[in-house]
Image (cartoon, rainbow, N blue to C red; front, side, top):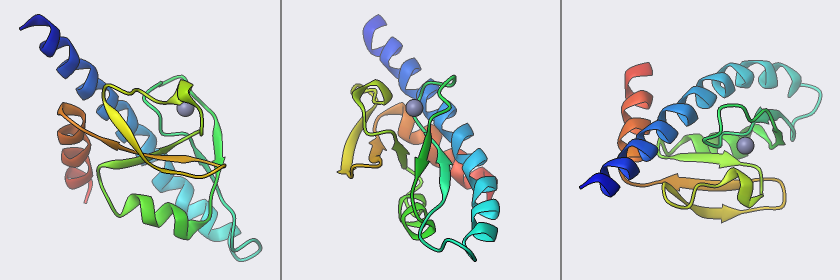
Length: 119
Ligand SMILES: [Zn+2]
């Protein structure tokens, strides 16, 4: 069925984009760990929404970051509907600095595969 195939494509593409942002943030973690000597509770991360042109920065601590990262299917985005794709993900946690989203459908599979292939 064409519609569900399109949705599948959208979900998979969103999952791939977000996995790219996750790789960037993994590198930022090294930087942030260096900074955390000075500022233990803050770090700057790139928004992990499915929009590949998004360059919004999100402030969260290293432990907040690790908590999201512990689940390969979760990403964090700016707390704004513009950074949310309701047909590929759902918000599982809201703070005033970021939202945590969880992928479902094909996007979840892609996100989990990418997380595995990197380790
Ligand atoms: Zn974004």
